[in-house]
Length: 201
Image (cartoon, rainbow, N blue to C red; front, side, top):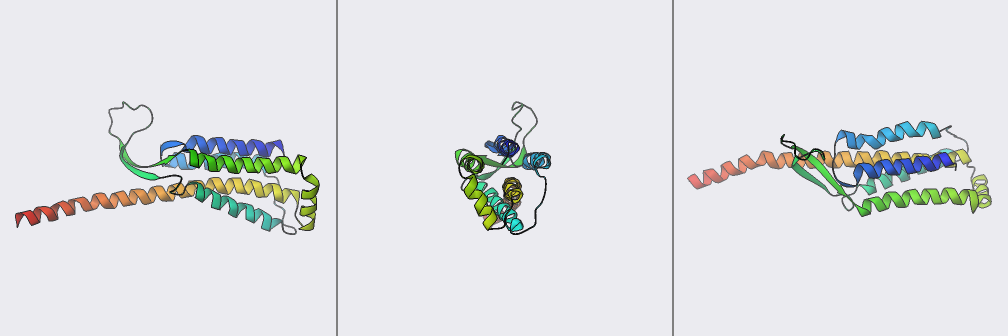
């Protein structure tokens, strides 16, 4: 675990929290920003893909763990998704142009706690691997036919998949909320017509 990995973890955390905390529109720019950040950062830290022994299993486990954590971080318990028919950009608020319909998420301390906890755990393990239990970790890797590169990749893939599935989860929930709102709007005239017809009778 090198300083580069630490920098990558902190950079991903900063990008995600800046994108999501507060009340934010679920749009392409917001969903894609962490993905672009990951795409830019990872090539600087990813060096090889070991396939010997159980290396692929370890890297796959990191990927699956990241996917699960990413989806959990944007679950309805932590990130409610609402519909705003007159959403305006954060700036300028005084624009005379009317707002546009948008799916909007609200995330706060719970969402931040998940990302901070996962990042802290990864950095804590990285520190421990170098300064607390390097011998025990080395024996574990040797016993289970794992390489240091695979362990490093496991953490990289965890970070990448967590960010990607966070974006996927937000996009799916946002589209579902817009579709639900659109269905409700389409049904209103029909309901109003039925009531008018009933009153006429």
